[in-house]
Amino acid sequence: MIDVSERSDDPTRPAPCCTAPRGGAGAHRPSGSTSVDGEPRRSPPTPPDGRDRRDDTVRVPAGTFTIGTDRPLLPQDGEGPARRVRLPAFRIDRYAVSNARFAAFVAATGHRTDAERYGWSFVFHAFVPQAVGATRGVPGAPWWRQVHDATWWTPEGPGSDVRNRWDHPVVHVSWNDAVAFASWTEGRLPTEAEWEVAARGGSEGTIFPWGDELEPGGEHRCNVWQGAFPHLDAGADGYRGTAPVDAFAPNGYGLHGVIGNVWEWCADRFGVDHEPGLQHAPRGPATGARRVMKGGSYLCHASYCTRYRLAARTSGAEDDGPGNVGFRVAYDG
Image (cartoon, rainbow, N blue to C red):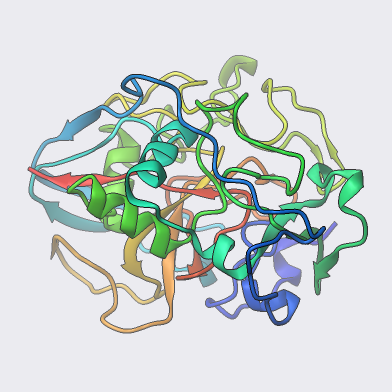
């Protein structure tokens, strides 16, 4: 097991349990009209009829809030210091974007994700179907496997689909894909400050929206790894891999699933130096090749990265998006 102290202090490189850089597996395979096994490519499945009831929003009131922490576990990530931000009121999705919502977007627009254009994405090793055969891993993180034709609608590669998990968060979506979806809804990605304020649900200074204990009284409040990473997930919280977007109780603002399940893209570029003093609607650094992700995922565990905390953060390139990354949308006002 790799301890936090053994990882690189390069802030542009997230812990490999968190995300997998697309460049880590070499050049992509150009995608054409056939899949990796030579069969014609299937079309994404049709979303279920009717309105997805998980597309509603909550309103976060204007105010001055505290984000970050003065007790960072990973100071090299820029978790601290605690800092004050002033934000106008905004709305944000109550749930992470589900497969059903994303399918409706694809059906309406014909959008093809970065994973589809590359022809592959990263799948956690325990979920790779045997029929896929040999796969290539990420150096230093062999649990991430390069699977051809792994997409949002075939999350584990050929032979898998989302029709029994329409209410799970969409994965294998890049920052570019998230921005395209948000634009379609006449919204945008939340800034990191907006995301953390909304995720805190009115709490300040706590590790989680519900307090400082991950499992208060032995109750599971989120979908994270239980066991010995990366080979044994006991699934004590009821899930191995993603959970439905409404699987756990909401925070004080009514948001579900802000901790664990899937990482969520933010609008900001990633940096570790924060401006001192009260910041008005901060939007992150003006330059940088990577974008912020918040919230942790079903792979987060205390023995490795502990990035399922509110102040925790990581980053990804704009075309990254393995099988544990999703998003939710924010709206002005």
